[in-house]
Amino acid sequence: MITFNKLFLLFISCSFIGWILECLLLLYQEKRLINRGFLTGPVIPLYGFGAVSIVYLLSTFKDNPIMLFFTATILSAAIEYLTSVILEKVFNTRWWDYSNEKYNINGRLNIVTLVAFGFFGLILIYVYDPLFNKVLSLIPENIVYIITFVLFIIFLIDSSLSLMVAYNLKKESMNKKEDLRKTDSTEKMFELKGKKALITGSSQGIGFAIAKCLAEFGATVYINGSNGEKVSAAVKKISNSKEAVCDLSKADCANTLYEKTGDIDILILNASIQYRTAWDQISEEEME
Image 1: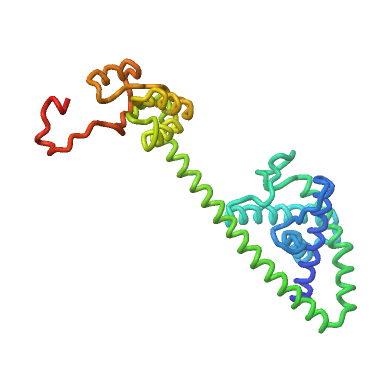
Image 2: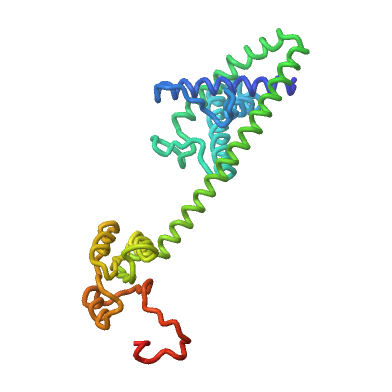
């Protein structure tokens, strides 16, 4: 007779055994202990679901080991593949990936692992389940209820906390991807490689900051100022910059700048001569 107690204890025990096997495998591969699995506790539910499914769906093939082996392999493959897809859809990440291994199926399944699950099914039906039932029959029923209740509560709490952590990780990952997308869009929008920019009065202050920013986005910037020493000092601080020393108060400054810069793509008049008068009262000479 199938009871919840037996079902859950079989599930949790096989989940624990699966966790041990995975940890031992990683210890051999990585030479260090790693808590393998989705949950915080020492269980991997995938093994538990697989074990329960094999015991209660494939016991009819108990008298035919070959059929049991192949059906256990196929059932394990279906469970692992489906679990992989669901976890990826829900949490936007793969919890295991066989892409770098031979004989994989979409990176979700590995033929070698599936063969191992086939043998696991044989051991489960012929060895573990009979032993499990025998041990369970020796424990008083009220103790079985208590053990089941305690383990179920612990498993429920662990699952809830792990789901919360996984959800927060997914949310954080999506936020980072959105930030990267925005950053890439901004960089593309302000891609200035190959452009030339002239910023007047850029040897210091706001003009210098503007020139530095444009240079960071790839533009060749011309540092302008009337003090040659300050202009030279500014050019040394900004990569991809050139000197354009010129006094804007001089009438021939425009021609001098053009000789230095040639045609430009960006002009920022950070420094200019101001006439404190109404705009409609400025003379043509002042406008020029």
